[in-house]
Length: 178
Image 1 (tube, rainbow, N blue to C red):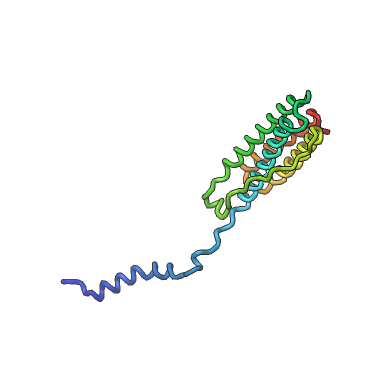
Image 2: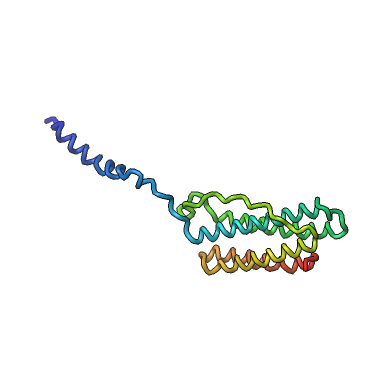
């Protein structure tokens, strides 16, 4: 016996009705994206701080190599020291970026990071090294302050970076910074 056309229409309507109701929320369905988890915000802050540190060291190496004091006797040794510290910071940055997975649910709502501003650096070698030393100490303190607020694996990385940055301070002093 053939099915009644009215019966088919009723069955089809009951199957489609939940889809129509879900789709009728209008603009409510287009809510703001969720905010990133707090530890993701802290990770992004650590990445921004490390990017700024890398930019400082790149600028310092450029200044010593090409700036007004270029060619003085102590510059090659100082440049080599700064290049070594720069390489460590680039590795820190690589490790931090590895932990931020764009598009993951934990990073939802997090926009791309802006490029760091080019820092204004002191012109003399001694003032430059002192400036970098103060920046290293501040960065070390900040990284260490984040440790209690993040998951264990990120805390371990931040503590390691903090310790590394703290060891850069005496290296910069030995290179000529007060």
